[in-house]
Image 1 (spheres, rainbow, N blue to C red):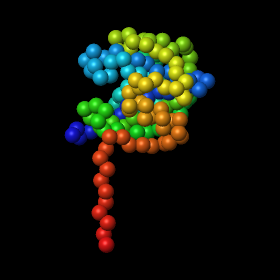
Image 2: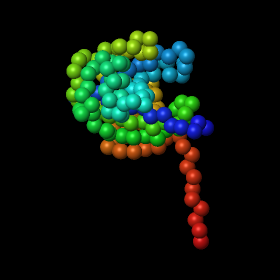
Image 3: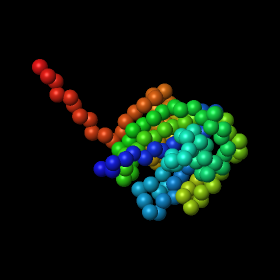
Length: 154
């Protein structure tokens, strides 16, 4: 297992009980090709989590977000969604400038709004966990870790 954890930022653009998702185009990883995801990416060393989330939203779907308009809605500690464990930070906003479009056609085949109550079946598990936690107002979760039971001393 890797000796570090990546930090991912995910952006939930929310509009009238709908959420914006992007459809991945990934010929290198066919298991992800055609599956839905949130605008997201990795935190860079020289930026805050809020700045990273705003940057990723602009890079992927072309919207401008003031980092002050992002609300942290969930953190998930994930193992098994990639080669290294990761910490996923999910931020929601109902405020941005611009109309979402596909700014990365080499990585994304579609951008579409979905009702929060009717998400697509082919949603990648990792972001699906964060979206479901947002819908259920859960602030923290873990996914993919083996549970270790503590031995009870008698």
